[in-house]
Length: 80
Image (tube, rainbow, N blue to C red):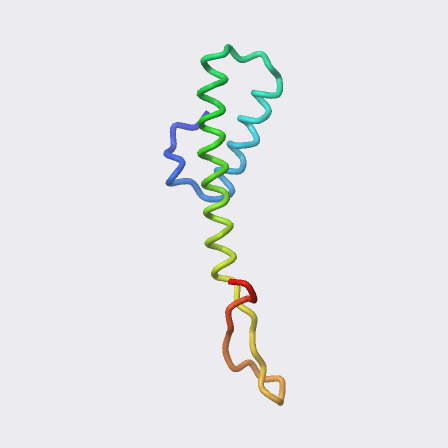
C-alpha cells in the first residue's frame, strides 16, 4: 500500500493501487483488521478514480466544423 495521499494521486496511480488492494482482498490471507483498512483504502481509491474520470469527461469536447470543414471551435460533449 502506498503512503501517498489518495487525493494527490493521478488516475493511473489510484487505479494501480486499487488493483493491488483488490488482489490482496481476493487472496483472503489478510487478517480481518487489515482487510477492513484495505477495504476503506479501496473505497477511497475508487472514489478518486471516479472523480478523475468525471474531470476528464468534462474536458472532452467535440470539434465543430464550418461548411468548408475547417475547425471553428469546440462544443461540450452531449450530456456534459
